[in-house]
Every structure is written in C-alpha cells, then in structure tokens.
View 1 (cartoon, rainbow, N blue to C red):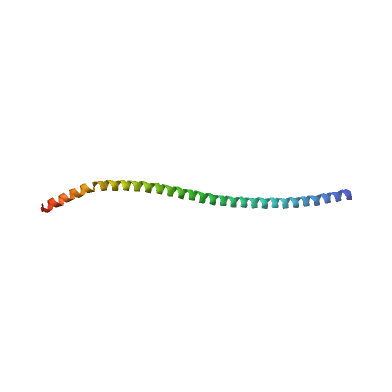
View 2: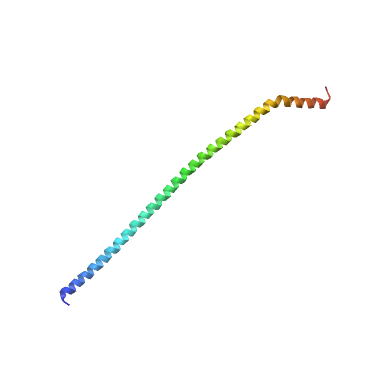
Length: 108
C-alpha cells in the first residue's frame, strides 16, 4: 500500500469517528428535546385536567344548587298548601274539640 492510500484510510477512519461522535451528540440532543417536549405535554395535560376538574365541579355545584332550590320550592309549595288546608279546617276542628270537651265535662 502506498503512503497516500494509508493517509486516505487514516483520514476516512478519523472522519468516521467524527461522524459517529456527531451522530451520538445529535441523538442525545434529539432525545433531550423529546424528553423536554414530553414533560411539557405532560404538564399541559395536568393543567388541562385540573381546569376541566374545576369547571366540572363548578357546573355540578350549580346544577346541585338549582336542584336543591327547585326541591325546596316544591316542598314550600306543598307546605303552603297543607297550611291552607289546615287553616280552612280550623273552625271545624275547634267546633269538634269544643263539642267533645263540653260533652265530657258535663257542664252544659
């Protein structure tokens, strides 16, 4: 082999080492970028999940409050009706009770 060929082989080997080192550095950089992007995506997903949770909780509280208010209004209406019925029957109840008390005491 000639000296020129040996020099060329040596240069090619050095170039191959350099290419390999650069490829490894590029691979590390790509890996690090991918890892950073994955962490950013994960953090964004966590924030979105927290926002969704708060929004869902707020909506559920509003719906529960509306259901409670509706139920309370229905119960108040029912109580009002029962109270009205009781008031309309009050004179008759007083009459019946008075009649029983008077009859049982024997004073009349």
